[in-house]
Image (cartoon, rainbow, N blue to C red; front, side, top):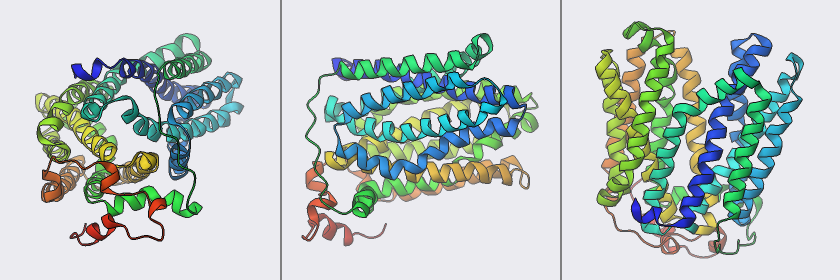
Length: 425
């Protein structure tokens, strides 16, 4: 990772990302606690995260925006507007103002649907291609580190100073992130003007993934996992109380353990990607997830700790490999829409699986849910590992791999001809 950290622009970017991520994690828990304290209702507190997740419905539209403006400028504007948005929480004074918290969290989630694909699309502008895996790995490790103490800090600040103070601190983190982005000097290519109809614009990211072999296979594998990954949210509580015979609060210990694994996974992911390639690294991440799901059914504390560490490490291996592959294989003018499409195909199944897991836990034992996660993840690993295209480390320049849909309207597309001859998927 040392060559990547020698890049001053990346160091500045990581600093800004650290501040904004800290604010994010601190705000989520604090807002749920605030609603709980105002209403006394746990279900209403849970709606805070639902409101935030609902903002994800705008992902297809945000991808178009990311590809039609300069990304650094867009990220600066989003951060400044987000700072103003969270400051509106200072208007919350009582139970009657809870709808304002929901509205802010929905808009906060919507802002995230712009920022996330914009960040993924912007990173190749400040990092050399050979260092993309390093940069993505560092971002994952940083996120794992901040996930350990940011929610606790947010809850502590809420208890000490109230919800308004957390909102002010979050606004400051957004402004710092905007300032760091403004300090980065970068030459971005001019955005291409719109050359197709609105429907074609919105769907171009999905169509690029569908017709480009390696991204298509990676997204299919990730989609399979997301169908069941939400089962962890409820199964872990049953594991702690019924399997390990601990209080529900012990879930926090397992969460910290998983975060430690995430830090280690982010540090090691780039080395594995460079040595084995993106596809094999993704397969390793899936196999480790499947193995750890099986180990969690044992319900013996040392085994559970080891499984949570492994589970934490497996996530960055999967995310770093897929993100790096998409960044390398997608033309710059399509990256925003491709990453928006990718995130949409992940967040929707994951949200559904959380709700499904909450229902299934009332019918099936938690071990059955964990076994289901392991089985489906193993199936995804076997699918991806059996694809010969995933076993090559050779990379074609994005502009040779596929042209953007706008540029191929009414013309023959060589990549489409090649992909159509591939065995599906």
